[in-house]
Image 1 (tube, rainbow, N blue to C red):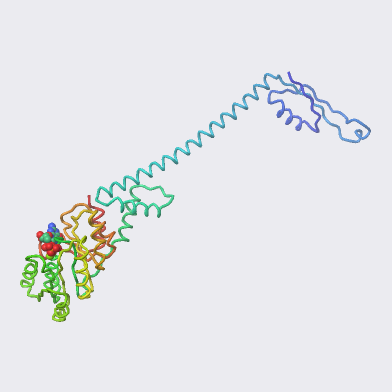
Image 2 (image 1 turned 135 degrees about the vertical axis):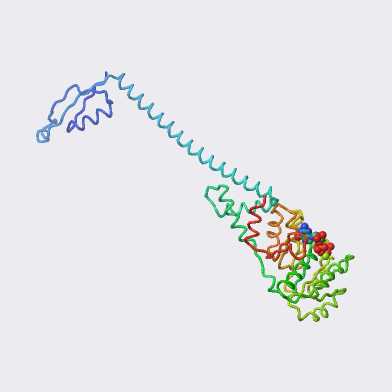
Length: 350
Ligand SMILES: Nc1nc2c(ncn2[C@@H]2O[C@H](COP(=O)(O)OP(=O)(O)OP(=O)(O)O)[C@@H](O)[C@H]2O)c(=O)[nH]1
Ligand SMILES: [Mg+2]
């Protein structure tokens, strides 16, 4: 048993101190008014002397209870913190899963890992702190395509030179355009070929020129260019075919460069087939930059169901697309490049 005496001003003070020091189980044993000691005490207000007691076993129990309660609170706090951390970790994990899933979709569609990573990085940069799901990624991807895809107006230029690797469809594209513009758009077209390298190359274009009844010239040396061009001054559009070049052959590309400098065209179109491997596309597009092409023609789109090659070409070439070609038929299988259509083509391809 613990017994304690308190000298207080009022009972309120007594109760607070007793509860604090002896706990809720303490009982008041006695209380009485007392005068303070000394002469001066006579003039001061009386105080109260309260005696309280508590069974010390009970007091111990109450202390133990308090300690247990504190421990439980601590454990609860830890649990809540843990749950919070867990849910942050879970969100991060989900974000990572979404990111990887989107990246894998791009890669499965033929987008090189390098471009896929750059696309994801720029999307993440733009959406810092945001919970990312597939829908957001898809929307952002559309915005990204909208930024990088550009198209141009072919009719803006008079002289157009077509360059590109062998067999991509340069001559066929020129035949399609010549037919399209002379038959349906009533333009005066002139055809020139400098491709005297490949057997049959001259004949190929000459046949189309004869069918369409349009002027056709063959250039055997750079010195003839100015003369041939001056004979075609009354043409609205002049289309120039070149020999297919292996972009790794710098000498060949330089030869074409001299030719282009002499022609001084409005447009140099890099013609590139969409069945080219993505890795090769990057190299071709980079190597051909020596020729300062300012437009691209995407051919053989009919032969691929993946969009990786389209995206890769546009991404690395970084110039507008003028035409896309979709088959071997002259002149039907060609379309003016439309931004919205290209975006949908990329988004809808499987
Ligand atoms: N499927 C498909 N085939 C095409 C397309 N464009 C051209 N071709 C075919 O591709 C082959 C080569 O076409 P060309 O026009 O001779 O190619 P090129 O670039 O002039 O070739 P070189 O002069 O040898 O460098 C031909 O069989 C064409 O019919 C297209 O859009 N789709
Ligand atoms: Mg050709």
